[in-house]
Image 1 (cartoon, rainbow over the protein chains, first blue to last red):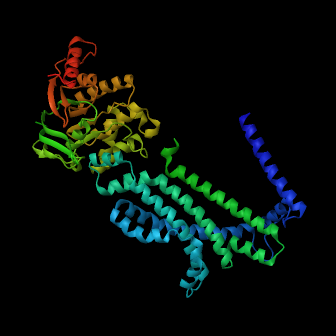
Image 2: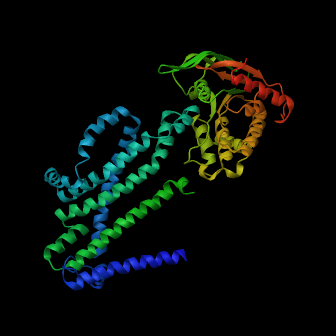
Image 3: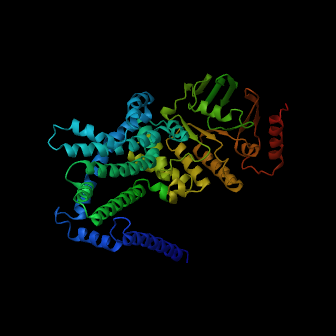
Length: 259
Length: 244
């Protein structure tokens, strides 16, 4: 009965949302395609793709997703070792934080113009700019959570390790790191989220790939709101799936927390 | 003399917590440290184990300075000291790996000590899946597995319910008589001290020092309800309340 109530309420909520949308579209107060029309466009884009771009919605989305994954891998590659070092070596933390804390408040998107200047001589500047933007967006959550996790290990675990004579290497890799794992995974989850938002915006500005580019380009043509909304739905779906995948990975990587 | 403390003292900033502690513990002896809470029992145990620094005086084992990095001591902590990310087996393995044992020897020892503490069937369980008593059993196995001469135990059963606690005390005595370790056991329970120890060391004062050492002459296995058992309880209680 509880479950039934839950699904009943969820369906009701969805129905109200669609009704508001439908009313807004029908009233012509705002320029909006009806839900049904949008759904049709969405499925068209999935099945047949957009003839002007010769790409399906999945293909467009996948291009953006690849950039995000590449950027986040880079963040992890740099952020994890640096975070471990900073978390276990206070002097380095102060040294690195002086600059990092200066850079951190700058939103990833603010790096776009400078990025194009920096990479102007590269063969594909847009690729490098997008990689930079995703990197900037995902790097800080990953770094900060790693530093915090490694630094703030419960004291008793360190006592245990010392009491049985564990060498520094073991204390770092077998105590501090696993103790920090849950926080690091959360950092990756947040990093992926920020990276995904950043890539969409970066694609609005330049380049000829990705779902962000598609939405912006379709907007510039004009009169294709259903395509814009379809793109937005795709973005939302990917966001949702990214989050779910990390949660799934979390269960694999830190099984002790789910037993 | 397995363990020798001479003139041991400890200061936290301006506060002197321990002063002029002298104690000799025989090999294979079971001594309990009792004293009011906050008197520095745990601090003394951590000093012996080399976990707390700095301090003054001498602590020696078999005439040498104690070094936890050499596996001199096994430390059993109050509660939740197991690494939650390792299984019962993994927790014991951690200590053995840290001490550089080979993989075959590790497996043999893990099996032996899991069996000794009666947890063979729970080898693959994470601490989160074990009861409080089971966790402390793993903690004891972990502290003993690499063969330290001295076992230092810091109120290991304080967080357990009364029944589990009594079972664990009996289990500890069984393990102790089998493994012949020197044990220094901190507790605030007089009953626990009298039940377990060969000698009870009474710590008292600000700064704390050894007020008295009580030989527990009650024959093992001890009955908590017996007359001489309770006479000793009374005696230690009297000492702790400041009598002499």
